[in-house]
Image (cartoon, rainbow, N blue to C red):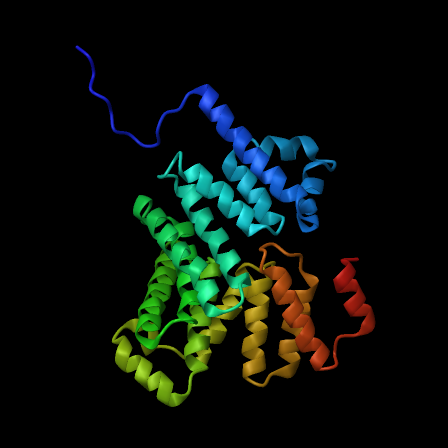
Length: 302
C-alpha cells in the first residue's frame, strides 16, 4: 500500500536543489560585498590567517548571516536569513537572528516611520521564534528589545502595551538566567524611559497601564538594572552607553564621562555600536574632555 504524503516542515529537498540554494546565497552575498567598499571588511575577514576556519563557518546560511552581521551588515544578514526561511520556516535559530538583524537595520534608519518598518517585522519574527520555543531566551530577548525600541515611536496606548512586553520578557529571562545582562538592560531602560517622563505623563501612563510594568519604576531600579547589565556583560557598548546616559540625566558628569570613555574603548560587536561610539564622542567633545590623543586612538583603533 502506498504511504500517504507526510505534511512535515521543513520541506525535504534534493542534493542538487540544496547545492543550488547555497550557490544562490553565496552569489548574493558576494555581490553585495563587492558592490560596496564598506562591505570589504567581510571579504578581508574571510581571507586572513583564519581563512580556512572562516570558509568552514560559511558553509551554512545561518553561519553566513552571522559573519555578515558581525561585519556590520545587518541588512545582508537579514536577506540571507529570509531566503533560508523560505526553505525552513520553522527554524528557531533563523527566526530570532532575523529579528535581531531587522532591529539593527531599523535603528539605523532616520525617522520613526522608516524605523517601524523594520521594528514591527522584528517583533513578529521573534514571536514566531517564541511559539516554537516558548522558553527560548534569544526569542524573548529580541522581542523585548524590539518592543522597547518600537515603544519610543508609538502612541501612548500602544507604547504601554509594548512596555508590558518588555517587562514580562525581561522577567521571564531572569527567571531562567539571573545573570542575563540583556534582560537587566531592558529593565533598566524601561525604568529610565518612564522616569524621564514628566510627573503628569507618568501619571497618565500608569492610568493607561494597569499592570506591573510601570507600578514599580524608579531611578533606583533604573540604576540597579543598568549597573547589573554592565557588571554581567562588561564588553557590550550599548550597556555602557545607557549607563552613561543615566549618569548624564542625573547630573553625574564624572561618572558619565567614565561610561562614555568606556564606550569609546570597546570593540564593536553589533552594527549599532559604531553609531553609539559616534554619539559618545560628540558628548565628550562637547564637554571638552575628549583629548586629541584619545580621539586619534579611538578613530584609528590603535
